[in-house]
Structure formats: C-alpha cells, structure tokens
Length: 222
Length: 239
Image 1 (tube, rainbow over the protein chains, first blue to last red):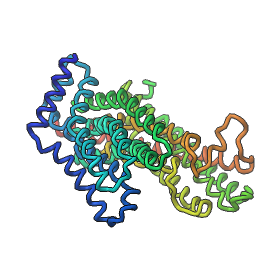
Image 2: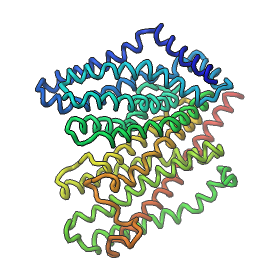
Image 3: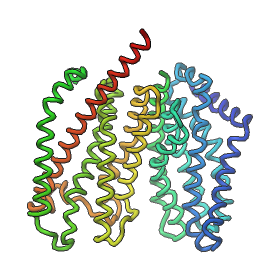
Image 4: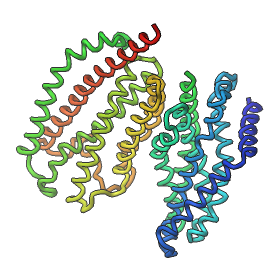
C-alpha cells in the first residue's frame, strides 16, 4: 500500500512540476497580495510591524484556498478519481497522499516565502522562528480542511466561490492561534500554548478531515 | 424510525400535530413577551435593557439546537439513507440561520448600552458569527448542484464537519476570558437567575422551539410536494 501511495504522491508532484505555473502562481499571489498592504495602509513601520503576522497569515490562507481546486478537480474531470475510488487502497489513504502532495507543492513554498515577506512587513526579529514553526503546523491543517471543501464542491455550479464560503469559516481557528503564537513571541508572552493548540488541530484534522474528504469523494461519483 | 420513512404517513401525522404546535407557539410567545416585558422586574444593574435577554438567549439556544438537529439528521441520512432526514436537515437550515441572525443582532443591540460597543471580537461572539457563516455555506452547498440528492449528501458531510464548532460555542465563555458572561442557567447547582425572570425566559424558549417545529412542518410539506413534482416531471420526460 505504501508503494502505491508513494507513486500517487510522486505522480501528483510530477504533474505539478510539468505544468509548472500553478505552484509558482500561488507563491506569487502570496507575495503580491502581502505587498499591497503597505501600499494600502501606508508605510509607517510600526503599524506594519503590528499587523505583519495577521496579514501574512490571512494571505497564506487565501493563497491555500485559491489552490484547492488542484487537489481533486483534474482527476475528477478526466476520470482518474473514479479509478482511485475503485482501487484496493483505502480512499482515506489516497486522500492523505493527495493532500501531502498538495502541501508539498503549495504549502511548503509559502513557508519558504514567509520570512521574506516578514522582512518586507517589518516584523520584529523575535517573531520569525515562531512564524515558521506556526506555519509548518498550520499549513498542513489548512490543506486538510481545504481538501474537504474541494471534495464537497466537485461538480458544483460555481465551485470556486462556493469553496471559499465553506472553507474560510473553518480556517478561523488556524488564523487566531497562528497569529497569537507570533504575537506571543514578539511581546514575550509565551508561544508554547498556541503552538500546542495548532499541533492539536493538525492531529485532529489528520483523521477527521481525511475521513470527511473521502466520504465527500465517494458521494461525488453518482 | 423506518416507519416514518413514508412521506405520506409522516405528513399525515405532522398535519395532525401542526395546529396544536401553532396554537401553543402563539400562546407561549405571547405569555413570554407579556411576562418578560411587563411583569418581570428590571435588573438592578442593567435596568430595562435586560429585557433583550428574553429574545436573545432563546434565539441563541435555537441557533445551537437547530444546528445540532441538522447534524443529527445528516448523520441519519448518511448512515441509514433515511429519505426524510435529508429533507428535515435541508428545511431546518434557513430557520436556524434566521435565529442565529436574530441572536447576533439582539446581542449587538444589547452590547451597545452594556459594553459601550456594538461588537467585540471575543470568543463567544466570533464563534456564533462562524456558526452563521456555516449555516450560509450549508445552504449554498445544498443548492449548488443540479441534482438535489447530490447536494443534500454533500451538505450532510459539511454539516457534520461544522458540528465541531458547537462545543466551541458552548464552552467559549469558560475556556477564554470573554466579555460575554458565562452560562447562568445550565449549571450543576441552582440557576443563577430569579424565578420572575426564569419563567418568561423558559416560556420564550419553548415557544421558539414550537415555532421551529411549526415552520419545519410547513417547509417539509413544500419540500415533499416539490420532490413529487420533480419526479412527475421526470416521468413525463421519460415517458
């Protein structure tokens, strides 16, 4: 089974690399949107430092959301999803493999780009390490929750707008604790509880979101 | 449970219950409003504004109760493929969204004189706002497919995922330091509220629940008729 799943992850990665533009576009969206904020709010450095964590988190979640249709949409359209559902490998494991590939293609580049944006937003240096750890814990959760939304909206009318309506409310806890962790590091109030909650959310999303996404995929094939 | 899977039998029963439900709704809400607005005392701290409670608190309960009903009906629909459970979940959602909106609006009207602001981003208010968004997402997903059964099943999965939010709302006032006060009624010891305020509150709560049942029966009736019309059309096209 592990061999099959490894093949699935490699296949998704290969597809993403050969099509190329998608993953780069997600990071470009992230960078451009964050750089709009200093232009919109004004370049006062202390204001930017205050809002930096929030802006980076909100934009990272939006970027993840924009990339959600790549998890299942192509496979749904060309029929390979049907074969994956029929395959002897449990569908939950297939979902996990596809989410892992999605995270490698979109989540990881966001984490790599985040420190650069933190510099642009004048984030105090104490926050950098925490921002990275928080995003490392938070972006897999956002991919997992997003997979549920992506699976539910397969074949829906105006699926793209709909997925934001479904997924963004569920992203709120991630945003709250992700920003609270970075703010805790900057003000010196402590980081551990927030990171623990982010970790707990990842631990809860791993089984629950994979189960829900698999259930949604099964009922999409009717 | 399967006995009520037959829509005709279910509707015959529901129609028998309906007039009683409707009459009791009117009586209880009228009594609750009279007791709450006229007979009950003003609060020694909050003055007359405390009377917002008689609408705010029951509608908050209903918002949670209806979402829990939708989640349970969705689970029933997914596990046992019960044909009426889908319809009940679908018909409940707009009522629940309405109660959530009433809860948010009355809460904000109450917050202005008491807290000095229409809105604060504390845990209780934020989590109820998310509940409202979940209701909207549920309704949107239900209507997003050309095939209504497909929409109902997708929405059922979403309802179960969103149920994570219910305990967060309930316990948000205990887990975090919120501006919103903690529960006064559902405590292990005696409720921290005087009986002159408790009775109108309970009358309103039961009245709101019966209102939900009444509206649910009306909406179920139209859902069942709509399904019948759809099936007749399909037969017409097929034949």
